[in-house]
Amino acid sequence: MKSDSIAVGISGILFGLIAGWVIGSQQAKLGPQVATPQAAAQPANPAGDGSTPALLDETQVTAYKSVAEREPSNPAPRVQLGNLYFDAQRFDDAIKWYSEGLKLAPKDPDVSTDLGVAYYYTNQFDKALEQFDHSLKVDPKHVKTFLNLGVVRARGKQDLAGAQKAWEEVVRLAPGSPEAQQAGRMLEAIRSAHPSTGSTSPPGS
Image (cartoon, rainbow, N blue to C red; front, side):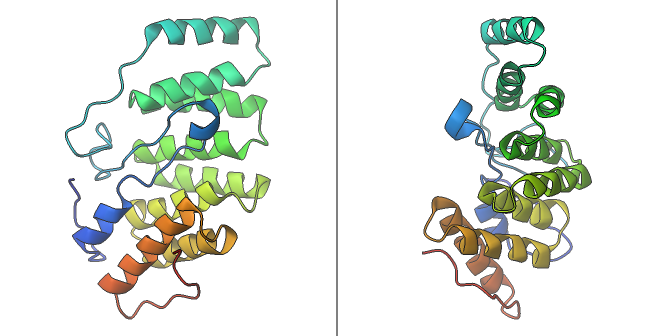
């Protein structure tokens, strides 16, 4: 797994733990959407481990585009197209389709957060954070948004304090969940790398 050092001096172990935790919210509903971030300077291969992106299924793309054209008020085919392009690591195309889906379903925090994740992979960190803000306005307890917010704060903005706050919120909102376990390990890694960093919440078990 490839990780680059940054000015705040986070250990390689911390970045190794971060890798793989930028998570699309659609995976439970609309198919797999997990990706692994690498150094921001090289967004074309998020896994950073030599893996290749999923092959784009052109048949599915054509089918969903056809549905989108027939049903201009239906966000679902647009979100599905965003998922397909995201999995193929074509993030600009994913942004286009997630944006169209979100226009039709502005109160869907899952789509909003997936759009924010796609912004992250195109090095648009401020846009990613703005999108997560929108997600949390719609659903202030959206756990995956807080989990992703921490990753973007840590890797994109080099803001450990902001990342810690976001991950502590994950633990508070969903104790014992897989997301809380991930956030808990990240909080522990922060404390190990930076012993002076305090924590107001215990890590997930």
